[in-house]
Image 1 (tube, rainbow, N blue to C red):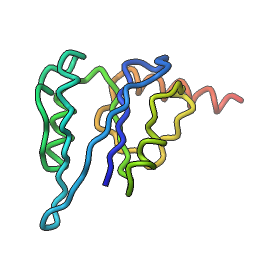
Image 2: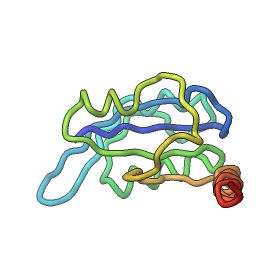
Image 3: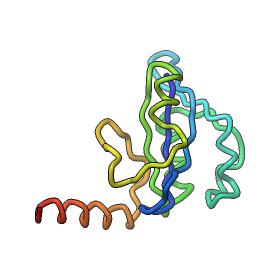
Length: 125
């Protein structure tokens, strides 16, 4: 499988950081091959300082421990083209992003505030 990942620094960000990893299965257990995770070492996630080959749970834990300030979520896809199209590096608004099917690695305080504001406005329309 192919994992598309978005990393948002703030809700008003125009282009979130996109990232991709490969998920494989051995003897019924998923492993994440994230060979370029080290690119985030100098972007506020200093413990991502090398390539990662971890169980799926360990991978989530590694990213969760890397930051509490960024919103990180992912979706797994059956092929790389679909992942690349869904998680492309084009401008988008967090507000218009559908959260259906997303797996949240982190949910920073600013995102929880953002969600409350967004849904309270919807109820007033």
